Length: 128
Image (cartoon, rainbow, N blue to C red; front, side, top):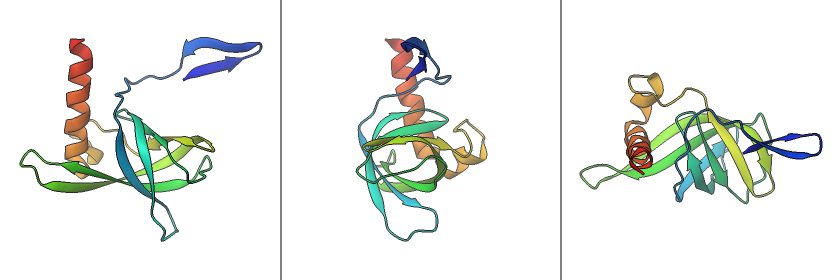
């Protein structure tokens, strides 16, 4: 993401955390709504996720994200993470986790498989 200044894009990167680029499905619900929607994960970091979705979202909306992952033993697991919509356009949104995914953090206890996947992706990026 680049920051916008007078006269166009500045080219300055505002992201503080490394983004891992993965294509996977994520289900989500807007807090207070019973309907489930889905999106495609475009990038994932310890602090949030970028998704593509057909569901219109608005900055400030509270969501519950459901990541469906495979454990090391091959079994399917579902992990839920609360997030806030930080920005949105008609086809995509940037979501910030309520707590970052750091080892030993409360969020890591809620989403250990997602944290492991993120750490694998970060390791691969650092080896490139």
